[in-house]
Amino acid sequence: MEGGRRQGASALFFIAPGLLIYTVFLVAPVVQASFYSLFSWNGFAVPTDFLGLQNYTAVLADPLFWRAFGHNLILIAFMFVTVLPLAFGLAVLIADRIRFAVAFRLIYFLPFILAEITAGLIWRFLLDGNYGLVADLFPGVFILADPQLALYAVATVMVWKSFGFHLVLFIAGLQQIDRSLYEAADIDGASNWQKTFGITLPLLGPTIALSGFFIVINSLQAFDIIMAMTSGGPARATSTMVHYLYADALSGFRVGFGSAIGVVIFFITLAFALAYQRVTRKLDRVHG
Image (cartoon, rainbow, N blue to C red; front, side):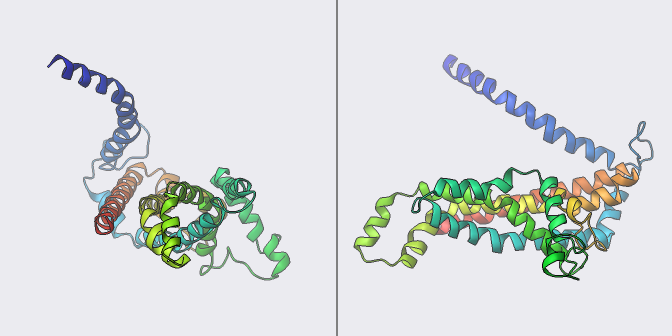
């Protein structure tokens, strides 16, 4: 009994700092935002104009919010179909088979180190149709001013920015695979495709799931690059949920309404995270 108490006290001692940080920086802000979302409040003094759930009703009834949510879904889909296959393919090439592999990893990882605002401003200049690189190569082409192209330009920059991070994840996953499995497959006469689909991809399942999870969360929270490149334009063509929060609430000191938007975004993100985790667990059981 005494030993169990000591173990419990030791566990509590190590858990307490993380639990405190989690409470202060996640639980408390969510609770606070949930409280403010029930009021019409401009961010000053004490909120007194109680509205109940009217802010939430206004958010969910606003077509601009759902349009922004649709843009988030497009970003998720675009990132999935580009980042995952590219990161996997390049990781297979440079994991350990070519000279200067470490240098290549560093080069591809460098964009991830840049602040998102910095990356967005760099690409805003390059894609500018008046004086950027695009203006020199394709006069009269205004990518960021085209509602049909602007969102995909932003998505492409997000791929460029985050690609190195996912590449490093895949390289780390590949290095954990036992090389003897490939040697046995070579002895059995397996082709490269058979080794890829029979050994590499199944054993990279957890890495693919983790990479996909980061894609979903980062795409749902996209804001900095969008503000730097397009400020949500043209004509809201690149507005996302977080940009909607900024443009339609916080910039006008509608803090109560903005808190409701934040809570809705939080639960949408949480729902995506839980659903994605459930799907990956089912896939693990199927392949396990």
